[in-house]
Length: 71
Image 1 (spheres, rainbow, N blue to C red):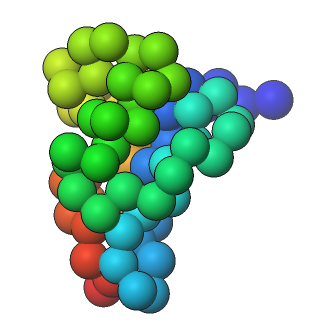
Image 2 (cartoon, rainbow, N blue to C red):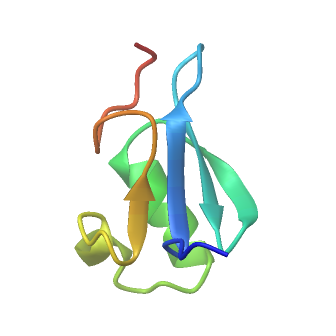
């Protein structure tokens, strides 16, 4: 099985926002970085705001990092 970052921010949905999974579990639909940080904090990642750009911890799929609107 291929390695995967523990946090995945999926491609933007047609209505905006991006699904977020932590270790394979859906934790919510984020519409901005603030939402994402809160989901990660609730999942036990206290320094969530510091890891958003760490590719070993967060994988941004199907769109540029920190972009929340549908293409």
